[in-house]
Length: 260
Length: 265
Image 1: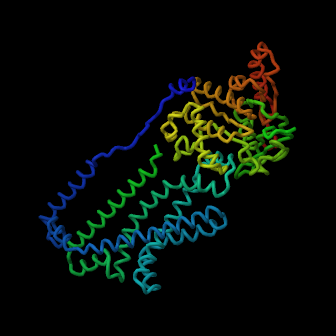
Image 2 (image 1 turned 45 degrees about the vertical axis):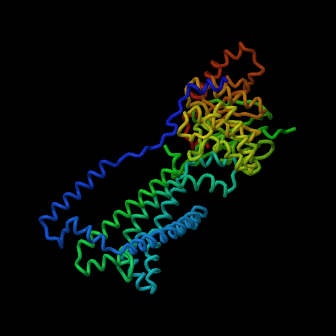
C-alpha cells in the first residue's frame, strides 16, 4: 500500500503515446503546386520537351506493368541478398578485430567504385543478364548495409553493455539480447537508404542488356523519342519509391514502437 | 566459513594510463578491508576517489593493477563466469533496455540464467508487484518516470536473488522524496533477502541511512575510515556527519593531491 502511494506521486509519461495518422497537407499542396507549374509550362513549350499531364497519363496506360513487377522483384531479391551478406560480414567483423582491420579497406574500395564502372564490369564479366543486374545491385548495396550495421554494433552503449555483462551472459546472449536489438533501428534506416539506392541503380543496370524491366522500358521510350513515356516511367519509379518508403516507415513504427 | 557474498580486499591498486600521453593516473592507491556475508556497507567519498573504479573491479568489469579482491573466495575478473547469478548491480542510470517492457527487463537476467520461461515470468511479475509496479509491467521504459525506471532496475537486480548486491550512486539523481523511498526499499529488500549489499554514494546522509558499515574513501582510492554504525550509540552517530566531513576536507587538502599523477604512480 505504502509503495503504491509512493509511486502515485511519480508521473507516467506518454503511456500509449502513438503518433496518430495525420494527413500530409503540406506535402500534397507542394506536389500539386509543382504539377500545376508543370502543366502551365507544357502550354508554352513543345510537347516533345515538356509533355502535359494528359499525354503523360495516356502513356501511363500503355506501359507494360509486368516490367514494374520484374524490376521490383529484382530490387527486393537483390536487397535481401545484400542484407544477408552485409549482416553476416558485419557480424564477422564485429566478432574479429583482424577481420575488420583487413576487411574495412576492401569495403571502402568497393564503395568508392562508381556504379557505371560496376555495370561495365558486369557486362564484361558475366553473360547472363539477370546475374549482371543482381551483381551490380548486390555489390553496390551490400557494403552500405555492412558499414551501417557494423557502425551501429560498435556504437552500442557501453553502459548497457556493462549492465548486461554484470549478469555474465555468454557471447551469443550478449549478441542476441543486446547488440542485435540495439542495431535494429540502424538496420531499418539502412533498408530505407538502400531501397532508394537500389531503385536508382536497377534502372541503370537494366539499360544495359536487359529486355525486361523499367530500365529497358526507358531505353525503348528514348529510342522512340517518346518524352511522355519517359516521364510516365519516371513517375512510376518515384511512386514506387514513395510506396516502398511508406511501407518501411510503417514497419519501423511497429517494430520500433519502444522509441520515444 | 566464507559466504558466497563475502568480500576480501587486500592491497588493491588500480592505475590507468591515459590514451596518447601514456601518463599514469592512480585511481585506487591501496585498499584493504573485509566484508562479511550479509553485511550492508556504504562506501562514501568525494567525486574522483575511486568508488566507481572499485565497483567496476568488484563487478569484474575491470582488472586490478595489483593486489587481490575476492568474493566468496573467487576473483570476479578472472573467474568471471563463476559469478553468474551470484552478483547483481544497480547503476546510477537505470540502464533498462529501451526495447523491452518493464517485465521483460526484469526477466532479462533470468533469461541469461536459462530459467524456465514460466518461472521467469512469475518471478519478474512478483518482483514488479513487490516494488509497486504491477500495473506497469507492459510499459516501455520511456513511458515511466525516473523513479519507476529505477524500481524496475531494482526488481531486475533482486530477481536473480544474488548473494552480492551492488548499487552505484543508484538514487543520487532522483528527487529527495523518491530517492529516500527507493533507498528504504533497497535496504529493506536487501535485509529480507540476506544479500551482502554495497551502496556506493557521495551523499553522507545516504550512507548513514543504510545503518550498517560506512567505508570512507579518500583520494586517490584509499580507505580513510571504517565505521560500524551498529556498534555506535545514537548520540555518536549524530556527531559522525561532522567527523566524516572533516575527514574528507582534510583529505582534499592533502598535499599529495598537488603531486602529478606520474609521481603518484
